[in-house]
Length: 490
Image (tube, rainbow, N blue to C red; front, side, top):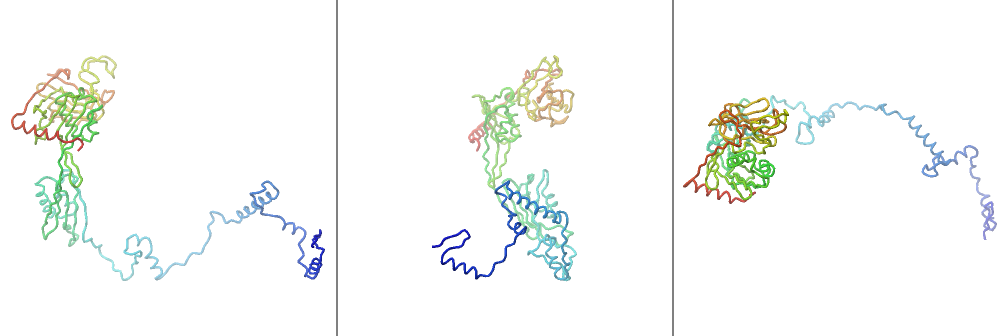
């Protein structure tokens, strides 16, 4: 058995042998003593994450702080440059190869990733070569001629005239619509002093026709490409709401079409006074839809208004773009001042009233019609513009002279679109609602004179009735039946 003792010696046979072996082994290196041994046994880098606040922890913190301070003290500084050795300048072929890879030559464009630098074998050209062909695009402006468009694009005058003549033959002399895009291909020219020859031209000559011109010798050959057109009219329906004009515009009707619609209704009723929120409008508009996807809206064909079972149905004679409006029975009625000049509501009547700006009783010589700013104002009858300009408290003011000693005035406009001395037709737009002059808000002041004296506009009743008969009446009724068969929204 082995018995351990306090001095780690063992009392047994094995112990004697081990002691003997230890005695025979060479002496080990003596252990250091004193302050060196004490410094060696101290743990200078203890784990600062444990035993926080102990003596070892504070000793480790002091060591870390000392190391950081030493590093900062020996650092070269953030703003002090570190001097390095500059490379030797490139020379010879090495310089040429490096120069070929510079940014500027690559920016000029190259067939490969490397643009070879110029050397003694490169010959400088007197002028840059021209492209053999040029692809251009031009646009026809309002009132522009095709020949002038081609000349501005660089086509010779005689070639531009010859090409334009061919296109005019295809369009039967009609002008090319403004905004039409013209695709041009110009060929090589013998010198820079002459215009490039026209090789090919493509454009939409009409809404239903595209043409392509190609050079053939000294002239051109034209290829016509007809475009299928669907001419089914567009029918829009909806509620009048707070503003018949805005409701029709929101339904998708163009502004000019809505103005024509309001003018047609004004010949039969007072639009501002008699149209209610629950009334429903019905518009049928001329429309063309091309097989290529374009859509073009034209004139108003049918004007309808359902006033709770009482319908107003108006249409024009077939082929008449600016004729009278007839009802389904073929009767037309022209009314003067009974039609309101603007779509709105009467906010102040004719007669004595307390002036909203001056604050005392004063004769109000007309009607105030409240309407949103920018609402179009129409002439109540045919006439001549006597005055159009600024007129004191009326602001922007227009005065019209009608036949039979009747005159009418329109005040507080935001702007007017007629000039003195010009003739206007009944229903023509002469300006837009505003709040100029002595006004508390956007509205129209409408004033009427009879033989020089102001009269109540609502008391003036001028009308005439005409009716169709015979073949015209039959053609008119057939056209109306075709229009009413159109499905809404189609």
